[in-house]
Image (cartoon, rainbow, N blue to C red; front, side):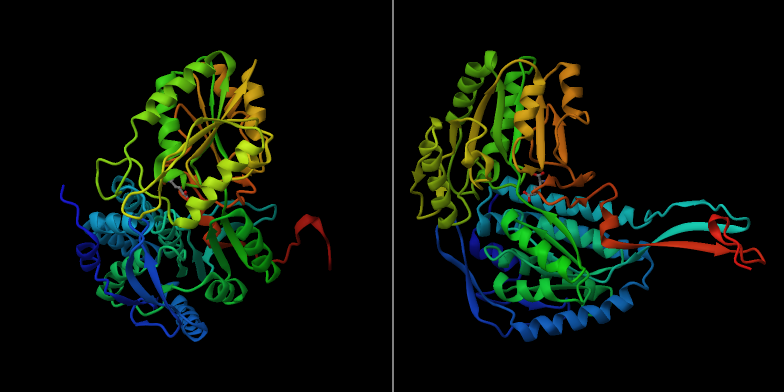
Length: 510
Ligand code: UN1
C-alpha cells in the first residue's frame, strides 16, 4: 500500500498550514494564541493552530447547552443513526486519519489504522446500544403501584483526551454520550491538536448532512491551564471524562467533585504479565513484546512488569532478548518498522531519567536502551531491567518502553500478590495452561485490576467490554458493557394506579 507523506495526508483531511482550533460543529473560530504541532518523526512543524480563548469557550458551552435541548428530544435510535454515519465517514478516512495519528504522535501506521478501527467499532456498537438503554422494573410492595427506572441524558459532557490515543478516546466517549442524548465538548491533548481538528471536520460533514444544529459536538483546542481549567470549573458541564496521568486526574476529581460534577477517570496503569511454569513461553513473549514496545510503551495498558516463576526465568529472558533483537525501528509511516518515535523530546528525557533511576535504585539492565538518531526525531530503543517490585521507580508508571522483570517463587498466589502490590489497577494478564492457576488469578482473591486476561497480553482490549481500572487508575469505565450508564442520570419512578394513597413501609397517617 502506498503511504502518503505529511502534505498529502493534511490535504486529504482538509487541514491547512494554519487551522482554527474551536468549532461548534457548524462554525470554526478561535481568538487565542497561535501554537504549532510538531511531528516526533523529524521534529518539524506539521501545521499551526489558532487556539480557543475564554470567550470562544463560553460561546461553545452556550451553544452546546442550547443544542442539548434539541438533541435530547431526538429518539435514541435516531441519535444512534447519526453515530452510525460517523462510523461510515471514518471508514472512508481510515488510512488518512491513521497516517495523521502516526505523523502527529508517532505510533506506527498499523497501530494508527487500528486506532481508527476502534473508532469505527465503537460507532457500530453505540448504534446498536441506542436501542438498548434499558432500565429495570420491579414489583411494588403496594397494590396497584408500579416501580420502574429510567435513564435520562445528563447534558454537556466534557471530554479531555490523552495524546497516546488522540482520536479513539474521543470516539469512545462521544459515541456513547451522543446515543445517551448528551452533547460533547472535546479538549484534545496538547501534543495532538491536528488529529482532533481532522476528526471534527469528518463529523461536521455528517452533522451538516443531517441538518443538525451547532453544539452537538464541539472542539476547543487550548492549553490545559486555560480552557482545561475553564472546563473543569464550569457548572454547565455535569460530566467530565478525563484520560491521562494519575497526577492530573487527582486534581480533576477534586475540582469537579467540589462542584458536584461527575467524572469518568482513566488514569495510569502499572500492568503486569504473570508467567507461570505452565505457560507457553513463546506465546507469552509475543504478548509481552507487543505490550511493552507497541506504541513505544505509551499505552495506559502497556506491559510494565513481567512476574515470572524462578524455574522459567532464564528461558523467558533469553526468549525476550531474541524477540527484542528482531525489532525494527524508524519512520512510523513505513510499514516495515515496528517501533516509531516517542511523542516528544520531553518523553525521551523522562525515559532515560527513569533508566538512570532504575540503576541507582539497584535494578540490573538486561537489554540496554539507546537513543536513535533518525531524521532528528524522538527515537529510542526499548529497555528491559531486572528489579524488585518494591523499588520506588517500579511503583510509578513510566510512560515509555521500559519493562521490568520480577522473579517469583512457589504458588501463583505469590505472583498475584506482587502484581497487586502497586498503587495502580488497570490491566493484568496471566500466561498459563493450568486451570487452577488461571482461576486463582481471576478469583475475588486474584487480580485487583479492571482488566484481567488469560493467555492474552495487557494491551489491545476490544471495545465490547467496559474499559478502565481500579485504585489510582481512577475507577472510571468507558466503551462497552453498561459503561453507557455513566453518561446518563438514573430516575426511579413509582406510579400509583390505585384509587387510594397507601404509604410504603405500612405507615398509617390518617
Ligand atoms: C489507552 O492507552 O489510553 O487496550 C487506551 C488498549 C486500547 C486502549 C488503550 N484498546 O490497549
